[in-house]
Length: 294
Image (cartoon, rainbow, N blue to C red; front, side, top):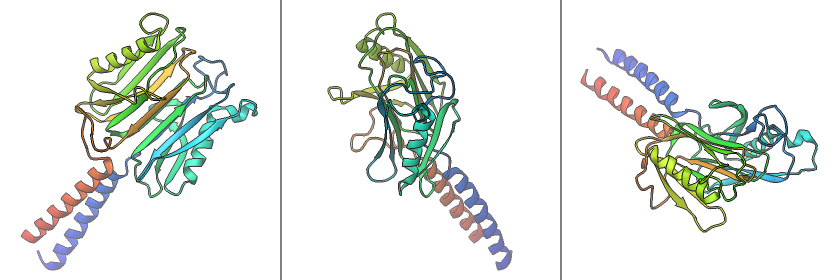
């Protein structure tokens, strides 16, 4: 092969590797969902759409550096259209999108198209490292956070009040293996108390192969961290019709916690962007070696 032919072949291989690497690198990431689309304003109705009480909803996003939290305070005296879950979602999306580091878009959650979904990315187009949603409104009965490429761990707040008049459902979707989907009846022991329900949630996750350990157990907002051996976590979704379960807080994060890491967890599995870049480097290097040997 002459020099011109070798150069042409190298350029073709380079173009292919760039396409492959870019496709893998820019997988969508950071999808959140809050509340149901359409329906009535009655608490516990599957079609919950309008908030009739106060409270607030927070979205936390981490790119590089420190996480940034965006807050929508709910005014119970505002017009009904401003109290709709979709309007609250739109308000939070606008705040995230206005930040210099992020971009956000309202849209469907692929895992739950009946929810008010949105996506958050880095301004440059890459995946964020963390996305979290917290809320304390009595009519907002469900939240979800997902990363299609997977994350290293999830954080879920512990239940602090149970009225024993409904249920609590938790869904954890790993990248590898079956989805964990369990509904706990809060009208019967032990799930009719906060301690009993938290114990049942932890036991259910452990029995399904997850690693669970407490975070800030004596603090104002105790929670558990969840990871799955041998797999990344794609999504965590929580739902409840129990009138005492008011606060939800769900976070998914790509990197393990600083310093200590996760005991028994997945470790520092490369992100989609890192994997794409690694593939790109390996393919370009192997192509160069092949050309030199010709």
